[in-house]
Length: 292
Image (tube, rainbow, N blue to C red; front, side, top):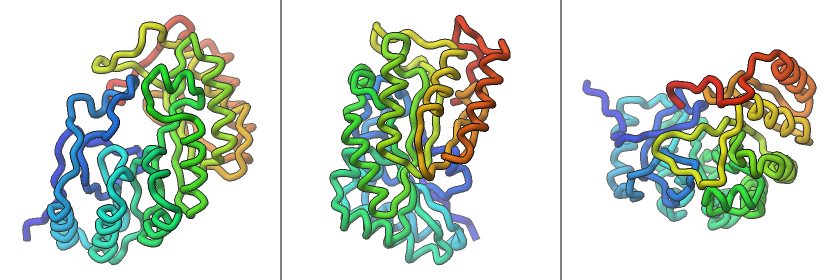
């Protein structure tokens, strides 16, 4: 029997944690696609694939891979889809994959807030589990500089709403996004916002400018040392009660992981040793991964 796999149109992105997930690309690109720090979907016109095409693809794929338990819906901000359409996709996935454990997707704050608590809980009942939310920075100035089209408060409200409906939020922050000009406020406000959010999952990535993005003139890239110093200061300021933390993306100079609050002292101690080791580049960005 020829196995049917989902149709993928490049570029296709997924979080590192979704490496073993079956992916259905229900929309192409990003509905906002104006963030100056992000080159993921530049040149891709956002559009939603036809509903019947997706429903058929789910059924066909299930006939070849009926035991899949982990599903990821792509591309960016799948929560932007109309509730009724997203609900039907989740219904079909639940019907087609009897071993299904969870469905995850990217979600912007405004798209979460556009759904009612009742709608979010209905999606949770269909095994929607984790929403990947890009905070990037808790600073309104930094978000404005990079054209994020979100405010710190909308992102706080969105994460609180989602988690009140039993959905997990995996929140991402970008070390160095404030550059030198906004560095202090980027650190302080990111700590403030995260402490209000209390996300269940948190990851920190180092911002690395890539060729197809255009940061504003006032932005100047921080050094490798300064990026790790930012990570130390953010962790030091966090008062999280139940959060799994990861900074193991290839963009980071050193992999780091732990749980808040119990793992906070150990993570700070590890970073303190690194900062005192003279291994980090103080005048430049240091090692950059070939792939991000």
